Length: 82
Image (cartoon, rainbow, N blue to C red; front, top):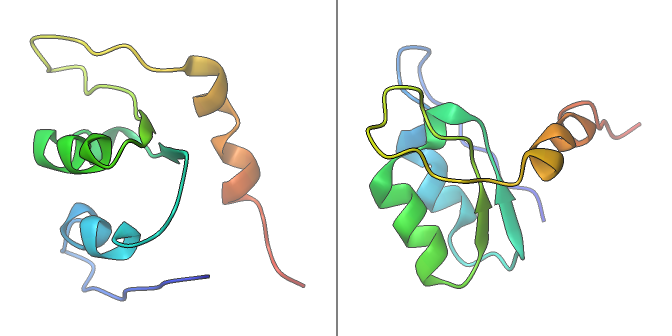
């Protein structure tokens, strides 16, 4: 299943993130630093899904994350349907 949400350029991607993953089954959610928001992370983790999102550098308490899984995100970013 693929979901898309088109927003204006000045709108942060995080505003649509929760709606895009709602109701989807996943074992892991991998995302970049802009998705490191407490509400988004707790929403994902409440459903029993593992988050692989690096903490922003300005966080007082730095969370741990799976660096090896995070490095593999580029495989998804480069994936295209021919």
